[in-house]
Length: 273
Image 1 (tube, rainbow, N blue to C red):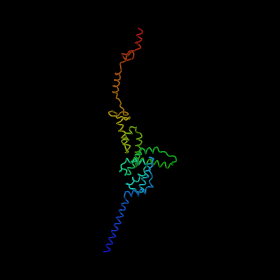
Image 2 (tube, one colour):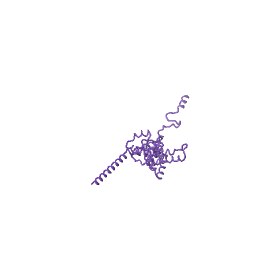
Image 3 (cartoon, rainbow, N blue to C red):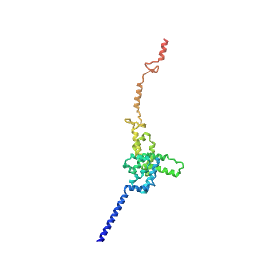
Image 4 (cartoon, rainbow, N blue to C red):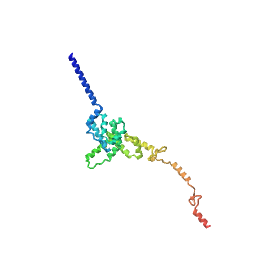
């Protein structure tokens, strides 16, 4: 009987210790505790956000590597990165909803967009990149590779076929007239059209607008050279007949319109008489 009571008491104490340990673990895994624990782990690995916009892609790459290395949960990434942002970036976040601020991918995309770091900017930086004074060729090559990687990633280009089509589409954009290019970019927006889709969009613009941007409306241009109306032979004849009839009759002798006469000849004849 005594042994049974002792055994039950030991089991109760063991369950109490287990409950206490579980509650302690739950408190430790609370948001505040997790933020503090992971914050202490990454505080020396994360650097402050650079002020130069062109350095942001490389900085975000470093941040993503830190998340992977320390296994940071998704719900903590935004909370840990906000203290590292510049004053301007923090002020920009006031235009982002609280739910979007809690999402690291949305926060990252928002900041890159606010600093105008899109596909066009990445490509321009890659094409115009030059070796800095004192920069080694290895470092310059690495920077070029990163710039090109940022551009292809922004275009969701991850295989050879997409890269091939992207090069063709870029050449097509560079070849389009200004008004046609503006129309294609308005249609494209944030998506990336294939070269064929871009060509179809450009053709659709030219079928509806003149090169100067005027809407063709009721103008008949199909089959005409350069989108201009070409008169038929009958129309030309009618036009020439109208031009002849609209001119005043000529005096055959003086080659002057009839009824006017030659003023100087009239004066001479009057003086002689």
